[in-house]
Amino acid sequence: MLKGKARAHTNIALIKYWGKEDEQLIIPNNSSLSLTLDAFYTETEIVFDKNFTEDIFYLDDQLQDEKATKKVSRFIDLFRQQANCSFFATIRSINHVPTAAGLASSASGLAALAGACNQALQLNLDQESLSRFARKGSGSACRSIYGGFVEWQKGHDDQSSKAVKIASDHFEDELAMIFIVLNDQKKEIASRDGMKRTVETSSFYPTWLTEAALDLAAMKEAIAQKDFIRLGEITEANALKMHATTLAAVPPFTYWSSESMRAMQVVRTIRANGLACYFTMDAGPNVKVLCQKAEVEQIKAKLAEHFALEQLIVAFSGPGIE
Ligand code: 2P0
Image 1 (cartoon, rainbow, N blue to C red):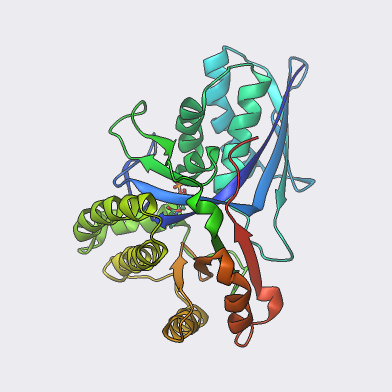
Image 2: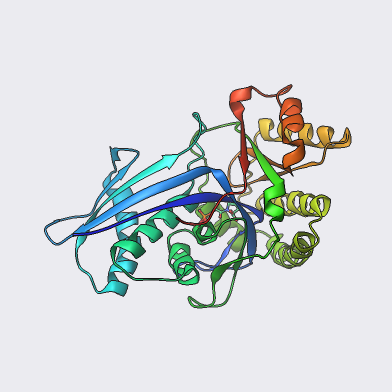
C-alpha cells in the first residue's frame, strides 16, 4: 500500500491565462500571474494498492461518477507512468470553501492531487516539476504549487511551460481579496470550452496576446516596486481585456451577469470615494476585489451596503502546497 496526502490552496490570476497553444499538454498561449489565497483549499489523500481493481474517487465524501473518475484516472496515469506503477488508487478529496460559496476550483484540486501522488509514489519531484504535472491536469493548477505571487511561464513545450515563484519581499502579505459571491450555480460555458472558442474565432484574440505580455511585464515591475495602485490598475484592465475577447467570439458569449456589472460599478464608486480597490473576474459571474489589508474592513463595510454579508468572503495571501 502506498499512501500520500497534500493540501493546495486556490489562486486567482491577476494576469489571466486565456487560450491554449497545445490542448493535450496544456501549453498556454500567454504567460499568466496569480496570487495564491488562504481562504479556499483542497485536501487530497490517495492510496495505491495492488489489490484494488479500479480507481475510486470521493469528493467531499461523495462517490464520484464514471466521468469524474475517468478524468482523475487519466491524470494519475501520468504519475503511474513516471513511477512505473500499475496499481489502482482510491482518492479522497475535500474542498474547503467557506459558507455556501460554491467556489470550488480545479486549481487547488489538481494541485493537491499532484502533491498526493508525488508523495505516495515517492517521486521526489521538486516544485517546478510538480507544477508541470499539475499543469497537465488543469492549467491554473500549476500556479497553486507555490504561495504568494506566482508566474506561469508559458514556455513552448512540456519542459519549459512551468510555474515559478515571484520574489516580492512579502508584498503579498499587504494585500487582500474580497470575493463577491453572486452566483454559485454551475457556469454555462466551461472555461476550457470558452477559451477554445475564443482562440479559434475571436478577432480580438491576437490583441489579447500582445496586451497580456505587456501587462505581465508592467505587473512584475509593480510588484518589484510594491506599487499597489499600479498593481490594481493592471489587474482590473487585464481582466477587462480578457473578457472583451469573448464578445468577439463566434458565437459571442460573456461570463458577466447583470449582478457582475453592478458589482464592478460598486467597486468603481468605492474607489472614486478614496479607497483603493480593483476588481477582477474569471470564467463565471463572481467578482473579486483586490485591495490592501489595511483597508479591507473599510472596503468590506462599503460593499456590505450593496451585498449581503454572506456574499462577501475575505481572503489573504496563502501558502504553497503542503
Ligand atoms: C486563470 N482561468 O488564469 C484563467 C482566467 C479562467 C479565467 O485558468 O482548461 O481550469 O483546465 O487549463 O485552468 C480556468 O481554466 O482551464 C482559468 P484548463 P483552467 O485563472
